[in-house]
Structures are given as structure tokens and as C-alpha cells.
Image (cartoon, rainbow, N blue to C red):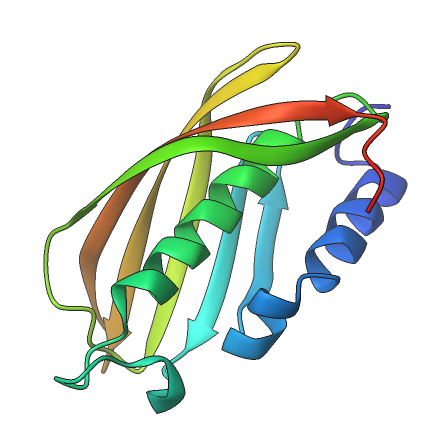
Length: 145
């Protein structure tokens, strides 16, 4: 299966939509291309921390999913994706009207895929990169939910 056909994009979107965490946070798929996924999320005070910024765990979850699904776009049709490890760095307080999570594949292998991503806060048309991530994703075959 070549990613980008309507069947592969539909599979990615269906898998993404089954994530209760992403639904709860209001994170949606904005764009998909081979090796790249962009997710978006409106600000929601339910996921803020005590200073009113978006919580680091929420930002990390968005970046992790963007990277995971970017890796998924380059995996074979029998594979599912799981996170093996990641490291996040926060560059600025996560404040904004909305957030964009970008995931990009650096190197895709049969089992492991190396990715990087970023979280961008959008506020009154101004964009601020608030966090970065490097993550390793694993192709898992025969996974039962």
C-alpha cells in the first residue's frame, strides 16, 4: 500500500479517531502527507495548569500523536504504531487560542522510525514555538486492541 491513497488516509484517520485522549482534548487531524502529520487543538481550560497555560502533558500528548501518525504514514499496511521513547523540551509557556502539533519523520525503518516534532501556539495571528520533541516509534504487527 502506498500512503496517500484514499484507503490509507482513511485508515489513519479512523485509527486517530479511536483515541479517547485525542477526542477528550479536542485534537484533530489538520493535514497528512507521507512522513508528516499536523494536528490542531483549540485552547481548553480543562487541560491547563495552575498558571492558565496549556499543561505540558497535553502538549506532549499532541506532539507524541503527531509524530506517531507521521511514522505510521510510512509503515506497511499490516503495521500499527507504538511509541518506544521520546524527549520533550519546552521553550516558552504554552499560551494561545489554539495549538498546532507537527510531526515529521527523520528516518523510517522496518521496525523503528525516528521522528521530530514541535508544538506551536497561535494567538491573535502570532505563532510561538512552545515545545519540541524527538521520538522513536515502533511498527508492531499482529497487535490486538
